[in-house]
Image (cartoon, rainbow, N blue to C red):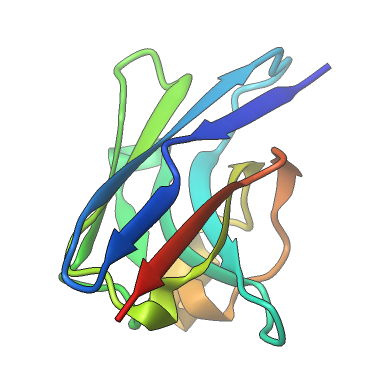
Length: 130
């Protein structure tokens, strides 16, 4: 039974920062990556950051490049999302995923185009006020 738990969400003013944490347990196979997605009301779910096991390469959606940083523990069971320069449009429920599309798709097509993620938690809410 895969368990994914996100934490660290909250309410901040525009320009502020938050650090999200995701812990993963019960993975019975080597997860190919850990990723963060977000879903805002009335919008499509969006993958914003992912870090792949092979090569420890990180990918970002264009909307967060330069502001968000994904990192993971050496054990690869914990992943963080450091979010700086938060804006009201970053308001969303943020989810962690322990299964991602193949890395070549992120590299060729861009992370923001990918949708086939699995093993997600209940999410943590991020609210940014102007």
